[in-house]
Image (cartoon, rainbow, N blue to C red; front, side):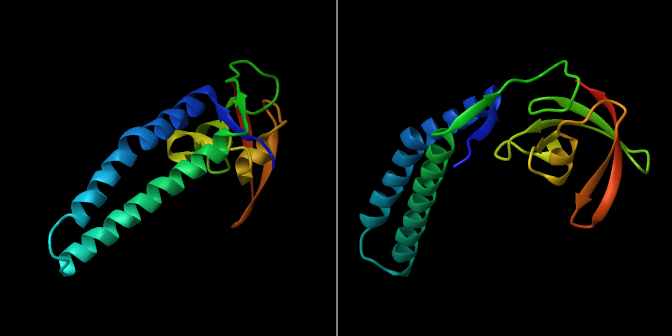
Length: 155
């Protein structure tokens, strides 16, 4: 299996979430389950609460398993402030054909959040920009078709 690419910030964030889930959230869900089971005669509401507690427990355990899988094989990507080509961890400013200018940081897919300016190295834009230089015009193959962007700045 290929490693998961994370910035140090992303790694730390996932470790904090895993710790929270394993310590506090598991305990909260266990207490919720106990209260639901000890709630007296099992009527419709009690059954619903037990089912909701089971679902919450399954979600927490699933998320813990998912995070442990990600964190078991991580490659930390250093943020690159100066580079000649776009690579993991670099910030890149591009201009679309319509003149819109966007700045993105290239990160692994787990950390991607386009609304926060973090695009995945495996996304159509991210993968197309990797290895390109300032001034290059890059064709992006997206689900809607091909479009071009110009790299204005790296770093």
